[in-house]
Image (tube, rainbow, N blue to C red; front, side, top):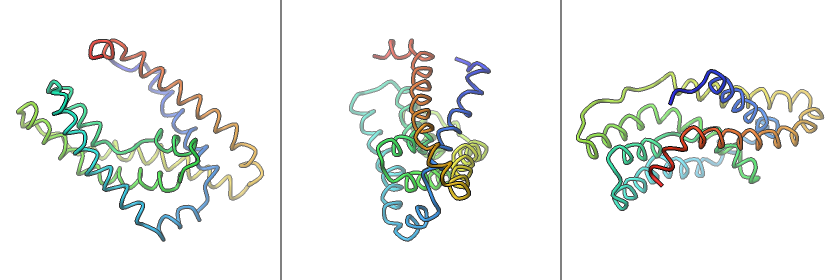
Length: 198
């Protein structure tokens, strides 16, 4: 189904507001701590890049999914974490700086790992040799949507800490509402698919 122009405009704006809210709660010291203690980042990357696709592969085999669904599952497993993962971390009072770092680093690595995993999945499940090209534009899009608003939020916190403190809670609530709207839109647009494969 083709996305409507309104939806195409709404999603990036909503994600930008969510990431701005995260930036209001972060400082450079948060990211410096991640650099000083890289072990959690390395563990997270191994889990996302290696263990998640492996687990997904065995799940598709265990449930004997149709070839198209199996490839779709592998595509999801190979995709880097997105904006909503950062918001979940924020709402759960987790390490947001670590999550954003993982999103940024994994987005770069996914330039190479995602086509590899998807192409291998096509060969294994569908016996097709067609290649999925590297999509640098998508990676750049992730960086703009994720890092741009975060940087603006951090700048507001640095230059006007009182304003950042006043905005943090309302923006956090707005972010949760926007996430709920995004989920409702996604489910409603693909409801027939859910019903078909439920």
